[in-house]
Length: 312
Image (cartoon, rainbow, N blue to C red):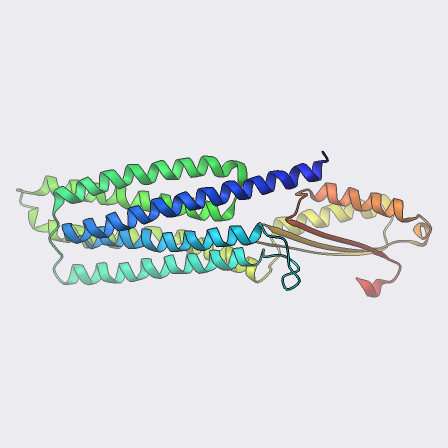
């Protein structure tokens, strides 16, 4: 079995694992969402309802991620001849934007709740909910992070980030509810009504940078902006080969779109290489491909040789 076929097999296996993780995550997220909404209504806690709504939105986003994963596992068609790599950053940008909007909406409601005089919360049920969900979410987070170390999926990474956000939300709620429980019967008991909206406001402000970071990275890929490290790598490879073979000039274009790597290189060769033959040029192509790495179905590499600079 060649190295290329081995890489393809590993990537296909990684896609299967990715889809399995996403399907399990959807079921778990729907369970957490329904639990959060029900407990939030019973307890009278807007922060718990926010936690449930966050999970419900996350379930929808995870479903989109699963759809993208299935598309990426399909061969390119005549209509999508470069495959479906562009769909991945689009979904990441959309999902991240929804999380940002949810956080902003929750923050506005939290501030309004504070100015309206706060709200009473049934602390007993609220503490039970926060403990159970915190343990559940942290367990899923660590498990998915461990699995993603092998397949290195951006979709799983975003979903894992969502589980961490859910776990942090539930943990913060737990600390706030325990604090309120200890304040009962003291001179600070009147502050308990402000605990729920205050915690909600703090949580949303703390969480919003995470989806913003995801959106920025995804938009860069949608706009096909070349990452600095990729550009430096290509320039270094071509500068070294120019010294070795005496190329007259070259141009290279590279970008990442989702998990797809697209590279196009045009090389102006000297007259001394005019009769080198295809075999020698193919050896140069192999050397460039080995230096770039990331061999497999996710890499699109085009290398052309010419005598005329107009083709650069």
